Amino acid sequence: MSLIELLLILGISIPAFLAIYFEEIIYSVVSLVVMFVTVSIFYFSLDAPLAAIFQLTLGIGTAVTLILVGDEITAGETKPNHRNKLTLAVTFILLLTPLLILELPLIDIRQLGTISEPLNFPLSEVLWNLRGIDILAQGLVVLTAIIGLAILLRKNEEVK
Amino acid sequence: MMLYVALSIVVLMIGIFSLMINRSIVKILIAIELISVAASMNFILFSWMRQDVFGQALMILALSVDTVVTGIVMALVIMLYRKFGFRHVEDLG
Image (tube, rainbow over all chains, first blue to last red; front, side, top):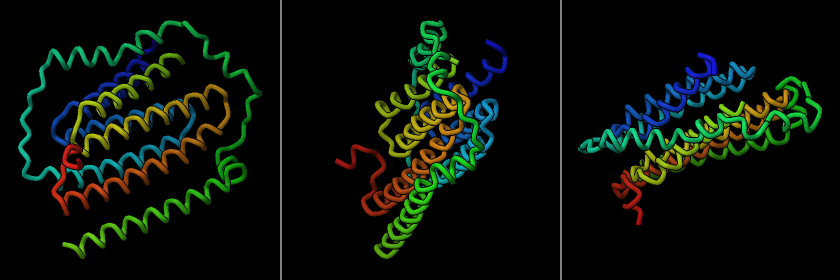
C-alpha cells in the first residue's frame, strides 16, 4: 500500500465516520465536505476528472443545503454528548474490518475486467450518443423536481 | 484494487450503521449521502478497471438523481418541521 493510497483511505473513511459521530449538524456536514473533497481527488486519480468535478459541485451544494436545513431544524435544541470513547473506537475498528479482510488477495478481481474488450469513447460521446435518451429523461426529472420543490415551499409559505 | 472495493464497503457500512443508530432526520440524510458515495465509488472504480467510460456516465446519472432525491426530501423535512415541529423519525409515527 503506497502513501497516497493510505492517505486516500484515511481521508475517506475517517471523515465518513466523523460525519455520523458528531452530534452537531454543522460538524457532521464539515466532515462530509472533507470526505467529498477526498472522493473527488480519488476520482481524479482514477482518470475521471469530469466525475470528480461533478461529485465536488454536487457535494458542496448538498452540504450547503444540509447546513441550512440542519440549522433551521436544530435551532434551540440542546445537544448533550454522551458518546463513549471506547465504544467509538470499537465501532470504528469493526467498520474497518472489510479493509482488513479484502486487502488479502482472496479474489483476483482484475480478471473480471477482461470479460469484454475495453471501449475507449470520450465521456461526452457516451453521454450524448449512447445515453442521450437517459440524459433527456433525467433533465425532465430534474425540472419536475425543481417545480415540485417550488410548489412545496410556496404552499408552506402560504400556510405559514 | 481490492483495497478500494473494501473502502467503498467501509463507507457503505458506515452509512448503514448510521441509518440504524441515528434518529435525527438530517443525520439520516447524511447517511443516505454516504451510501450514495459508496455506490458512486464503485461505478468509477470498475469503470477505471475496465478502461471504458460507461461507468462514469452511469455514475453521473445516478448522482444527479440522488441529489434531486436529497433536495426533495429536504424540502419535505422543512415542511414537516414548520407545520408539525418534527425533528426525529419517531415523531413521524
